[in-house]
Image (tube, rainbow over all chains, first blue to last red; front, side):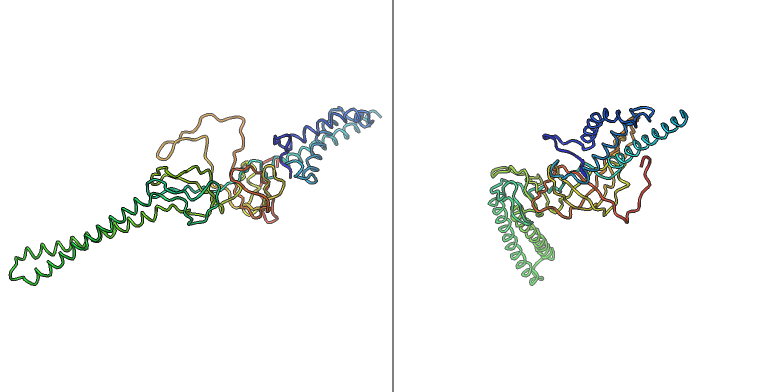
Length: 74
Length: 299
């Protein structure tokens, strides 16, 4: 499990970094998402964006824990 | 038609909210519940080596960061002075022996002439022999002490270890009992993870553990050797034989306290060097035989 990431001499908690990455990705994908007809079926489009962010955050964490080499980040 | 569409919207929204909740639950489990900490340290016991006799340091036989064996001589303290003390004690002993021999001869002579001498004189002679005999014992003890002191002028390593942070040079005057050199006791090397108290229920003695040093990707394996028996109560002051002094303020926002968990190191990759004080990430893995403790929500 990757618990911290080494970024330019600073060790940051992995959760924070993955959250920032997931947030950025979700922001980039939201326009695409709103164009889907699917989004008409929601009370509020924000719910879908929230789901996208949470899923991305979890997916990034899961992928990093299982597949990211520690040598790259520590 | 509108009714059906509204039902569908509700169902889809509920589904998406369920996805959000599931992801949050998974993230919570991963980051808040699983027993791992970034707050770990490599630790070892420090053995302060002190001289048993006072005196000038005449010789320093070690240098900084040197690995020493148990019994190896580290310092030599003013041997000539303690050699002189031993010579003096030897001379005292010889004097006592001569006096005792003379007194014993006199006593023997006195006792062979009981009709000529007063009983008092004979008793005095015998008492003198007894006093000199105890004096001789004292002199022997003093000589042995002087010999021990001379032996202790060699300051030896009490354990196998590594000299650390040594600046001692010949010519320094050392007082007996004052630590002069610190040895890092190599066999006591271990990792201590400071786990939040909320994570402790998931940690059991003997659980395998992975340790990652800061900046080192190779895994160090170990197992949970022990969990601290107690930590300081920060809300309470007052020592023994005093009344309890409990802090009257109770904070709304509280942080889980940290409990040291000792990890015994089983295997270190050959090229990795453990230095006490290094930062480490500690991950404890559950075993199938662990009896789970019911933890408070959200679990």
